[in-house]
Image (tube, rainbow, N blue to C red; front, side, top):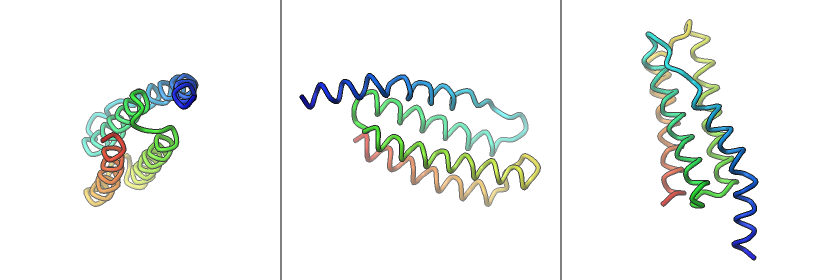
Length: 113
């Protein structure tokens, strides 16, 4: 019964995870903004890792939701910082965002291994 419930949950959540991954993957590089691009690429990569973990069953849907909330928070903080600085990220803000991304990345790694 436990296996059937997992499979049913996976079938129900897989399209949502794929849609979320596709929406994240649509972000493009912004010419002349290497710090913004770095943050965006890391967020996209973490989303791919979350999706892969859900697909192979190493990350539960609840864990995936929490990790995605963290990634969304980081993206919102990056957008707010860009708005404050004319579309750019300062070195200090990039450092703060990278620390947050490192924490989220470690959490994803721990969940998958």
